[in-house]
Picture 1: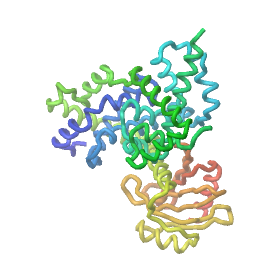
Picture 2: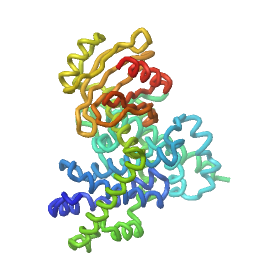
Picture 3: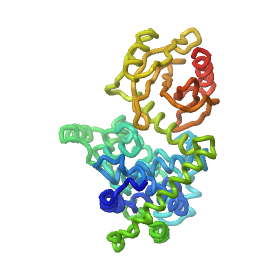
Picture 4: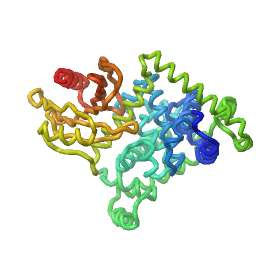
Length: 176
Length: 250
């Protein structure tokens, strides 16, 4: 550990630490919990520091987010394995979880979108969060998630369609 | 009717990720595809709503405090104080010790490590399924595959074709896991590819451990100073059978 010297510290400070918000935001949406996200973001930063030797330069945000993502998946596997093994059936999904009734109960668009986003399977959720909230390019998303760009596009498409339908269905449902 | 472009190029167009030529192609397409044209309007609407909703959640104050307490994060005002970094190093060292002790407690290797390693292996398997250049050899001849792998991996790789049991050897390749070269045997079972990652280890033989990651199954075991990890989206029972075949022949 002590092998990392003062230069490493400065580099870490300059390159990695500015992305703490990004780390927390991704963890928060992946884990659907602010409390768990705090723990995972903290653990990810410690891991980032431990692995810092292996960072070859380049996109530090993508590098950190990759660690956050892997830490989230490891945590989910251990604590909520059902969430990861859940197969995504779009039709079923629309009907059973994001029903107009559940969503109509949660008032404004923000709550509604939060619920709809949290209902997405983790694999679609992460892509959407990285694109829409974090503003990552497809190339960055592919690097962070280790999925090919074609799959990034199709995942985005499904996630967006899902969110859009939750939004429109629920507005209709909200009307008396 | 739903248009095929909606799931791919339209997203790229909407996100400004297409090259000029492909964007122009898609624009031509939009002129006569009502489905995509409508979809584009919906995408716009969704993005506007998302932006208005301000879903981005920056790090909480309590996270910043927590991290500052163990010295992991220097906020802008404290970034220049080197003393924090002593804490960081100390915290990281403590964590390292904890991890090492944890691993010893779990028979040298913790669950986290196992999951991490399996994750890397599954990622490597997924990468290999994508089209693109692969360092490998396609052959069902044990000797040909073995000759190629032994040379590349730098150790004697046990290569067997279990075609009569349904596991047909289709080739081998080299991959890098945790920074070391790993030999990979590629089998096909019921038209599904199964990768068996093999590397040298100093640890003693172990009973198989299994898990799931990214919808892929893995089974990992050690035998004769070698570690094996088979990955596939096949039935876990199939992997178990392959494990028995490999262990029976080494």
